Length: 142
Figure 1 (tube, one colour):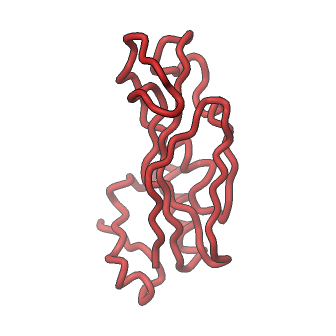
Figure 2 (figure 1 turned 90 degrees about the horizontal axis):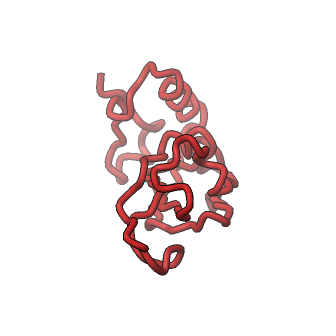
């Protein structure tokens, strides 16, 4: 069984605190983007600079996926050298995650293979939500 979360916005000076409601669930990051995507809560004026961003799913995965809870300071995600926008403009984070119930060891094994580069994100296929409770977790598409 999975529980989906909507995309949430975190400003540069905020801390992301993710957790799953049940003890047998793990966090899986489903999307993460850092930059200046649009005006909103964290960016009240564009100053002509919008649309610069980078995908940070891999950074969030290494800190959160496979864990029951995690805390990430938004400002610590991307170093100055890899900032997608001009340095004198503030960026923010958009992310979504879900909590997945299943065999903890199989999730850690898959995450380890992903981090080692043995698998790509498209090599792991999650089954339909209704099938999840009847399996030990994701299966490989290779």
